[in-house]
Length: 377
Length: 186
Ligand SMILES: [Zn+2]
Figure 1 (tube, each protein chain N blue to C red):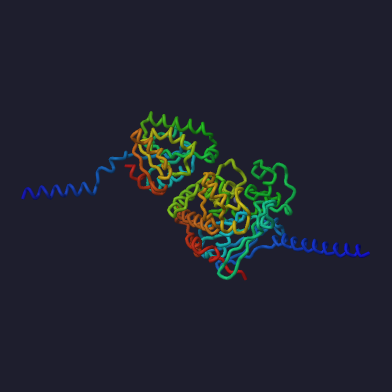
Figure 2: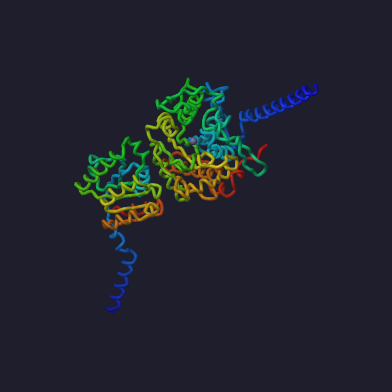
């Protein structure tokens, strides 16, 4: 009798424990479906959703905020896209930094910080990546999700064995959830293709002149610290490249190959006739040589394996003890954006563009990102 | 009195020589316009050369894949050296087709007596087996070479230029190639 009773007590405690574990891990898992906060500057003129450009995205996990900064005078129109790959935080954070700081006097800036919104609701299985990383502001910590390169399979499933993208290129099946292989999108396609289609609608209906796609890649990847340009933006990319060299920033200038289909720097230029440029910075938390994944690896960017790899000449960027922190990667993106905008103005001075509050590379490098982010409310 | 005149004249002459420094322009060849800018290896630096030529106010045209047919009225060829597999892919060429195009272009320039100005603007990042091969084939035919310093760390450009007595200018960054490019033209 006593024996059975003891089993009952033990069983109940075990069951309750399992339920609690299930509850808390489930809650943590589901918390990835809640958006981070963005606090736009007073320069924001309109806050739209992507579904307002393409209604089929309405009430889907692919719908995402579109921040519009319309100047009083007409002029150049610029689109800045972050988070096409939600595990490349320098792009997302640079985009959020812009939303929270800029004022546009002439022309228009449109910012989409979470381009693949679904990709921010999970992260890559078996990678051990943290769900979030934090940045200290003047008054408290801000937390940001670290997502996956691909759309969440809960939202788009199953993957085909071979994926043929909207431009007809054959790719591995999982690439059907890669936003930056899905342009120019499909009106009746899968969720990722619909997001791509929505972004094309923004480019076309907002008369965008220059569109920038912000990314990151591993230091062992050859296209790194790169400016990849569509042929229509060859001149401004070259001017920006030389401008950045004068600020001691080395980049790799690469032309977008016309036979590499589905990517922003190709299809935005071909289909929406905009000047399309993709920017890459070097992120160790992305790489295969890294040690333990952690939130500080994302923000501090220090890793001894990469220091060793650099000494062996295996990397495409210099990598020293001090690493490549997030603030430096964001600063590079900001410097590139500034250089490309001024190149655009140099190319055709008759069309105006005036922006204030763009945090400078030097200040972000010295004062940190948090100095330019609103404190959490 | 005469002596004073003479010494004043000599002083004046020395002053003129000093401010005009007649040696410097003669050290480097002078090229004529229009100039055709083309690539040797299809790296994106050909676009940098085009922006520099525009800023230098040169009469130029850009054809990344120029052939002997594009040489009508051209007085100078600016060859921008650097091999990029991405760039070759973009131009729809493979390495052997690009080598073939560049060598037949060089042959044609010799036939028509068109001088070649070589530029290497990609620095250290645009060196490596494929680029080096292109440098070694093309550089000996140049009349003048401008190179971004970090691309000549191992002295490859210096060595080839010395062997073939080609005047070489090193610049710190791509943007710094503007002045020597401007000065290279009449
Ligand atoms: Zn990416």
